[in-house]
Image (cartoon, rainbow, N blue to C red; front, side, top):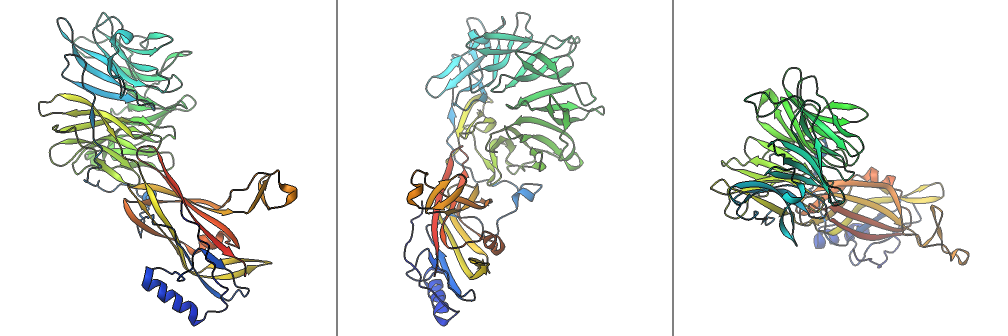
Amino acid sequence: MGDKLHVPIDTIRGCGAQVRRMHRRAQKARGASLVPGAAAGLRLPAKPSACVALLLAAGGLALPEAAPAVAAARTAAVARLTPMNPTPVAMGTLPGGSDSRALGENEKGQVVGWSYTLLANHAAVHAFSWTQRGGLVDLSALVGLGGNDSVASEVSDYGQIAGYSFTPSQHPNAYSWTAATGVVDLGTLPGGSESRATRVSDRGQIVGWADTTSIPAGADSGIRHGFSWTAAGGMVDLGTFGGSASTAAAVNDVGQVVGYSDLASGAWHAFLWTKAAGMRDLGTLGGSTSTAHAINEDGQVVGQSTTAKDGPTHAFSWTAAGGMVDLGTLGGAISVARGVSNNGEVVGYSDTGGGTVHAFSWTQAGGMVDLGPLPGDTSSYAEAVNDSGQVVGWSVDAAGHDHAALWQLPATRISGLRLTLASFRAERHGSSTYLKVTRAGKITFRLSTPALVTFTLDRVFSGRLRGKDCVRDSPLLHRLRRCEGQALRGSFRQVGHAGANAFLLPAARLSAARLGPGNYLLSASAPGANGTLAGPIRFRFTVKRP
């Protein structure tokens, strides 16, 4: 929190040489419009025509001088190649196994996936659960359906696991497991013999794909349709866009399902499905195909799409308001987005341009960042991310073996918030006097990582709260709780990069806030890549009556 400064500024009448001298002295000493020796106290002159100067100083927080209009950009810039350097952690394998992959996780840090393991006379693939405290645990005894192999695709915050296990006939069937119900075979759609679950929501809704026909001779599977399953309603066929096949890849807690389906033309398109509206085509990045792989609680969808003229496949982020946005690559031709957190953090993998594939993390503020592989490995793939910035996937060594891996994204720190108003005057509106800001104010601050910073300007009343209004102190109001503040014209956001930042706040916006005599609080906060909230940090200043 910024220090509250108390040194008053004497009443200044007129635009005299004294004010200009103070400005020049301040600019020479601090590079800002500061009244020397003064702090965040301003006394409004009795005459509206008088000039005043004000510095609001309390630290150092920042955004670029010309902050990019990221929300308006349809295509993200090519990614920075500087690694974020979160140290990846290898989860290991089950006994005797050579490979493992992490596929899903919950907000408690429980990770699930699959690992090879060595049985008495053969190797098998077994579902696993991993925690930092308990390590890797074989789940095959819990989720098995009679066959040798099993995979855990996702785990909810309540510990419900979804995936698929092989039956004695060696067909994979989707399952749900909870401590209360044990393993439940979800079956298949009518006419089919196989199914696989891809994701589960915290409400117990499971999605995936299932065959709708028997498997033709020599084929790996029959015709597949995406499904949604609930304990109450069973398995529901989500249909297609007019083609023959579809896959449901992910679901959020409000029941929105995403995946991909083929059109009558045979091209695949990403879809968003709801029970009320059915399947919605999300379009492409200009090419002919797209697939959706994940969705967060805000309805942000991520996946991959071919670019214009069926160019290379690029990762995308889609929202109802902004449509589909190209996230770029790590310098190579291809990228794929596989997971998204509720903070808007997107993860996946991309060509690096050097002949390798690396896991990435993408944010609106920081763009695409290379997460790198495990030490000694050559490639890496990110599959999911939670709201704590814990990314899971796998890393590949030179021999081609996969190793389940976890990256912990760094915390965002915000500091040094400062607001400077260099040019303004007092102006009367009826019986009240306010600041009329004639030049843009400047906000500066520092960030440890790129972030989208939210600023809020509050008026802090020396009074108590009655209903929704702040009133002055009075012995009659001693039972009313203290009033902490009241937002002025809401909040605004700005994208900041790592390091020192500065941006200009339009004079019209500051004037519209009607800064009359009183105490004010400028606050700044930012959601960090690791899910923690940076800040809020605060800067206090006072506008005084003459």
